[in-house]
Every structure is written in C-alpha cells, then in structure tokens.
Image 1 (cartoon, rainbow, N blue to C red):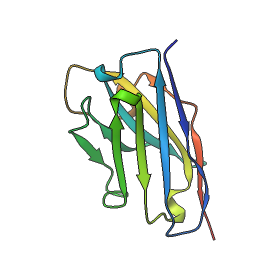
Image 2: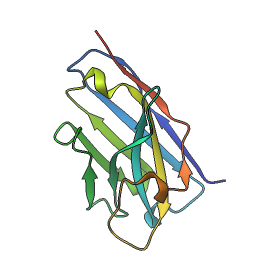
Image 3: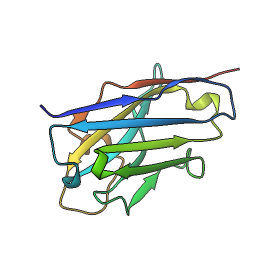
Length: 126
C-alpha cells in the first residue's frame, strides 16, 4: 500500500521552530518528487516547498523562502521540512505529497501530486 504519514506538528510561539517529517512506505521514493503543502481554515491548499528525486533540486514559496528548508533522506524513505522563524500566518494543516517523475526537478502545483498524507497541524500563536 502506498502511504505517506506526516508528523512533527504542534503549537509553537511566534519566532519558534518545528521540524515536520514525512515518512513513505510502499513505493520507491527514489522515483518520486515530494512536496509540502498547507491549508488554513477557509483557504485553498497552497504549495510550500518541494524537493526533486535526489534532493538536489528544491523550490520554495515566496512566503517561506529563507525560513523553511526541505531535505530528503531516501535511504530512510523520509522527507523533512525545517520551519524556523514561524509566524502566525504559518498556521495551517501541513501535508506532504508525492508524484512519480522522470525529472530531477519538481513543482509545487498541487495538481501534479497524486499521493497525499493526512496532514499534521501546525499552530503558531502566543
């Protein structure tokens, strides 16, 4: 069974940090680009970041560039999202997603991804 499971969310104060994890099972992660997305109440799901198959290609939304960092460890079948300098506007449910691709690059358009986790809540509040 193909599966992605997010973890690491929680409640943090503004300026704090969290590290989200995305664990994959049931497929060869070397063949997949991985993206992180988030959805706040009443808003559409938006792309946050993605990482290509080998980890050498990454993209970030303008709103998180310089604060977030995506990495992958294929041997562990895991992708991480390090989130620093968190702001209340970062509050959302965060999802990881995967898409099989021949490309070394990736994109944060959610329509490209066909395997999704269930999400983990991130709340940034004082």
